Length: 358
Image (cartoon, rainbow, N blue to C red; front, side, top):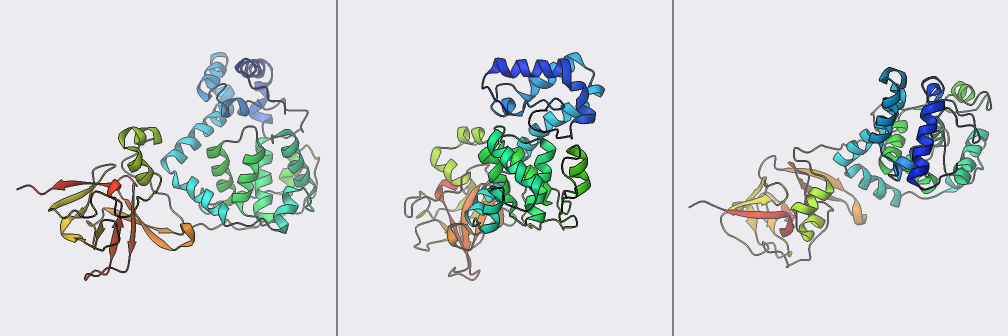
């Protein structure tokens, strides 16, 4: 696929598609006729990904010429991209977990055979080479590719998503990551997408027949849940609201140096609140001197915190975050010296203090 990085080229391609090929989109969009025949799809995704044109202006130009009923499928596909971005922005931990998962997945023999187009599945091998050579795959083919990768070849979906992002001109973090999760059956839990031999044959115009696939595989199980917090802000909004140190800790899960925080040796009466959203998290009566270098509490206000399993840095810990905005507080340990047996180890940069009224 030729991708000329200019806005004029993007608009020219869009206008040509509107004038000649969009009429075929509703009925022909799922067919992959090969590298040299893309008349049934727009091939606009690289231009949209790199913001040479936007989803909004694409839809606006299309709807200026056609009623929605005639181009509904095209408009829907455009705004799936917007939906995925919004969904991921509200759940950024999906992305951080994906990155962390990749660190622990090894590239074994089966993986190398797949990315080098050396499997026993002809269509898959040809799609691998097409992706590498042309930096593009038809959207339906991407789904078939992902299904074969996960359920027939038995490879981790995370490595497949990474492979796509390495090669696609239109690679979009939200659309790509969440589409792979959808195929695997973890985006819509319990519902996976299975490539079928008849489907491949039909939508490649009988180019590939009798493909041997695992057509009865169960969805991938991933028990992680991604909560939407009552207080939601974009990354830019958090940067504006917080100082740089607090932003790195609250939103990026950083840690301040020990014995440097303003509340480490602070023991006034009052309430410690989340610096991100102002929610009350700890009462001063629960604070104690642990000599660890960070503010420590033996309890939190009921319901104020969420407890999350944390396996980063080759350790098993329990992360604590504000249940109102998701802001990282620190970790809770089961080594406290008081009756609760717990030590909430908190960053000063994650909290503010409100003195008790006299």
